[in-house]
Image (cartoon, rainbow, N blue to C red; front, side):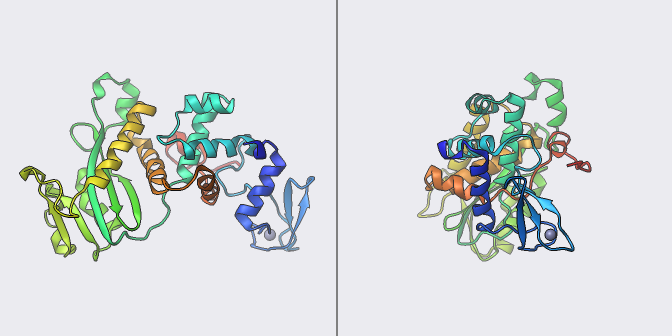
Length: 301
Ligand SMILES: [Zn+2]
C-alpha cells in the first residue's frame, strides 16, 4: 500500500505490467512514443497518428476521476478478502463515498470475469443451484428487476469444476438452458459428473463418460464420483451473497459469481501475487451507463 501512495509510481508500475515497460499506441499499435505532460501521458510517435494516450486507456481504470492511488488499494482489498468486501466497508477502507466504492467494486468485479472461452476437460463436476427468491419482503423496485422465467423467482446458477483446470460459473436466464450451458462449458471428452436431475438425463448421448451420483438413493460419494467440490463452491458463493452483500439483483449476479469463482481459482496464491495477476486483467472496462442501466449508450469519454 505504501508503494502505491504516489500516482506517478502507480502509472509506472502499470506501464511495466501492461506493456513490459514499452508503451504501445492503442490507436495504431506503434511502439514509438514520447512522454508528455511531465510523464503522465504519452504521445504516439507515428506521424500518421500522433494521438495522445495514458496507460489507463482501454482499462477498467480509464476516464474516471478516481486516481490509481485509490484503484490499486481497492484491487488489493477486493481480491484478497476471502468472501469479497461490501461497498460500505470498501468506502470506509478507501476513504471514498459509498457510491464511488460501489462503482469501483463493480468495475473490478467485471474485470475479473472469466474471459476464456475454452471448454473444461478432465474430470468435471457439474451442478446447479438456485439463488434469491422470497421476494415478498423486498422493495418493489427489486421485485421488478428479479422476475425470471422460473416460477419461484429464484435464479439458476450453474457451476462447473474441472478437478484439473479450475472452476467456471454461469448465471442462467432460465432452467431450460441448463444442458446448453453444459455444452458451452464442458468438452464432450470430459468425464462429466452430475446428480440425477432431469436436466442431465440425456447427457450420456453427448458425454459418453457421464457419471451420475444418485442422491435419491442416499449415494453421495462413489470412489471419486461425487459433486462435493462444486457444492462446496456454491455454499461459499451463497455465504458471500447473503452474508456480505445481503441481497444481489439477478442483473448483477453473474458479476458476483465471477468474482467468487476468480477467488476460488486463485485461492492458493499469496495476496501480493494475486494483486499483480489481477492487474493483468484490467483491459476492457464497464462504463457507468451500462452498469446502471444495463445497456450501452454511446460514451462521451
Ligand atoms: Zn498511434
